[in-house]
Length: 171
Image (tube, rainbow, N blue to C red; front, top):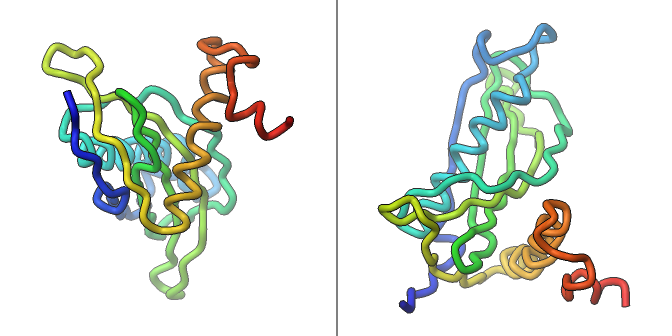
């Protein structure tokens, strides 16, 4: 079965949330788990948009919280598929906080997540490939294979000596 490749830009999802008291810790900052929950939803929406199928989260790469998002601030999440493999898709997520009173926006974090597309029987299914257009999309696309190999090594699904993309960085 041949699927028509799609542009990365066509998978973009932008979510906006308001940080309410129930979303915060005792310091008045957005709880990390709540942000990860919202990021998971944004990533799922972007990958579903790309493959036109239900998806499940397969992995979450390192998420570093650079700047806390305060109570009453707005959270902006942008998710875009950076590369598609056979049945899985890597999505790049960026998160900004916004102080609506002071009128400024600040970067909170970014991360990569991987989702797998499912067929009606709950089995993995093929997904369309990605066509990167911009320079940034091309860089994310190229780096996706190395990130994938690292994820597979860390999960025990690939031997380090088989990770050709990663080995090329060091040889």
